[in-house]
Length: 344
Image (tube, rainbow, N blue to C red; front, side, top):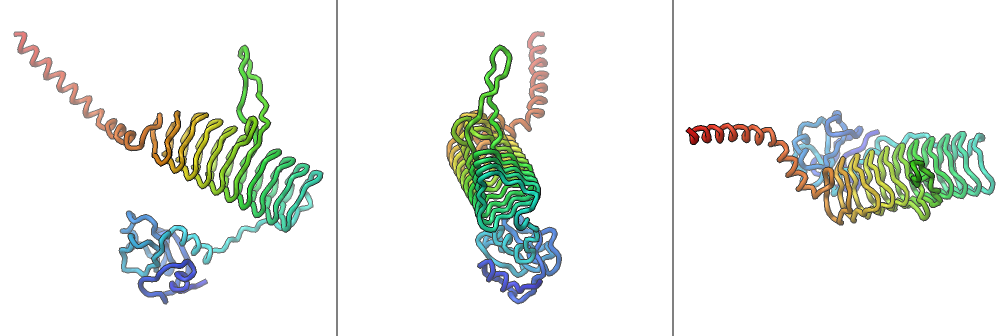
């Protein structure tokens, strides 16, 4: 496939600067791009790469406009480039079609229009599957669970009983939704299981990565808000509530009954204790240990979590400890020398 730069600009709603008639044969990253391909630059600090790339043209924003190559100016280069990728590399994933003959359907299951279910999937009694939903092979959908329209569930996902999944949700392989919360009463050294009778509610347009575990609530519900994106290997405990459009990065662990606001970012391997709140627009950086609530519109880091700049200053001070130790040793020698002279 070939497209002129002008055609691509019209497709993404951008403005061409330079020769709009050059032919583009593909799309790739700025370091990997070959001659004839188009690339993008979203972060201005990488502007020096614009003249080093072999790409024929670059999608970028106004502040990064520093090259002799033809460019397409647009407000969000990263999002625009995703659209360009779809133009040159259409989705070739072969989603299941129809209902495979090996599927096990319980009593009273309701299937919407154009539902696709892959081999050896089991769907429990009175489950509801919305229009155009796609469920891959080897999945389990529990009884009275509801799956929204246009939701995509990849192989080997387990969604237990009485769970609600919204519209347009994507769930990747190995994820378990609705497993029991971790609750035990310890009496005389013995751990007695506390029943977990609540549910999980997943909002519209949520994406859940591979091998994520989202526990059902003890009584009420665990909630993942609309538009939130969850990376691989995340643990979300019982009664956690996550707001809308938040980002939860890989290996985050969130303890029970923690409330997370809208547009929150939790960096990789961050750990949160239970029964705290993270305010709207807060950022918790990678490997941060959060032991108390975080106000809205703040960034925290470190263990325990502190304001980001406080942690940065503390880390910078730690780098100087060897020099400080040597200085103290030298000063100690000088003091001892002075004391020896004074005592003569």
